[in-house]
Length: 448
Image (tube, rainbow, N blue to C red):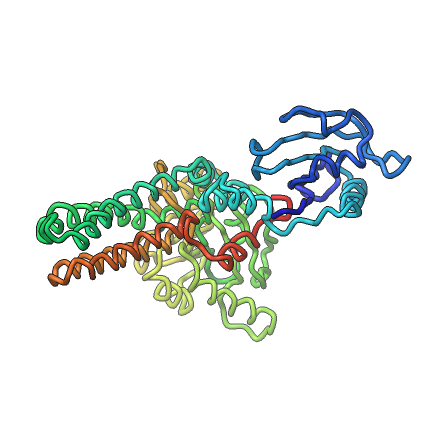
């Protein structure tokens, strides 16, 4: 934490601009050593200075240098950002020169980790940084920015304050039994507060599945026999020719994936190999993968051919998917009808060649998944670690309730309440160990 770190903060490719970021006690002086222009150590905070990066007498690049002085910076340390031309070679060259000045290459997520350790942000805000970067829809971005501005922390702080007041009342009673009877504390303080907290946490946990969907999307598998139009359906939904489409059965031998934004929710669509009996080894492997995907998908789009009679494999697919969230599509309605629909309860008849039919399909998916009018608020939390800790906290509160119902001594009840409080502290990072921090920040990119 006492050294100065550096990393490339932008994607390393040939772009218009690259940003090289430094943070630490010597950040400004180190850049000043390789900068030709006004003395950076005399520049005001939150300023941009024009000049050149040099190596000895050799000019490397024309740059703009941004200065952020502690504590008013992302890390609460002195931070410098060098805006250089976005070539891969020139960016790496400037990084190489800085590393030769005894500046250390930052670890993954170390800038955000320093912001956390220096008290600028809490752990939920640190995690939200990556969630903002990875957001793919308005809804997932809304959840991420809510956490980034501190809404999750405020909610957890509310829970902690309520629990702290209960624990304080119990501990006063333990030290001064004459202060208030245990029965009065249970009825007036413990029961109402714990019940209220459990209801609020339960509400968040009930919304967690929706939150996860908004953040990660819905694994969606297009299943069916060969040549029923699965790849055509994928292409139509994506509005691009991603999957190869031919008149020959078995063209798709491996999975083909794509994403669509449907009403603010991402569908992670997989076009699978057609399920049929085959002696071709490669096609057999594709069919095996399809069956594995069938078990993992949260939504199944089961496709049949309007111009082909149902057979044994079709019936097996109907049976295999009956307990899954599924949408049955009968494709090729523009051809002569040969399918017997009496064995299919609910289906959508369409042609992948018609845009209106694809729009009908999208509306049907929205209806099945109930994603037409999702509005997020600060009770939508999508972070898996936070959800896991809230479940743990709920269990401790449930244990406290059970202890009260069993008329156990109030100090026994207090143990569960203390554990619940500690768990809430682990969410925001007030009580957290180094291993958890290392694991969490390791998924960040180097310059963040």
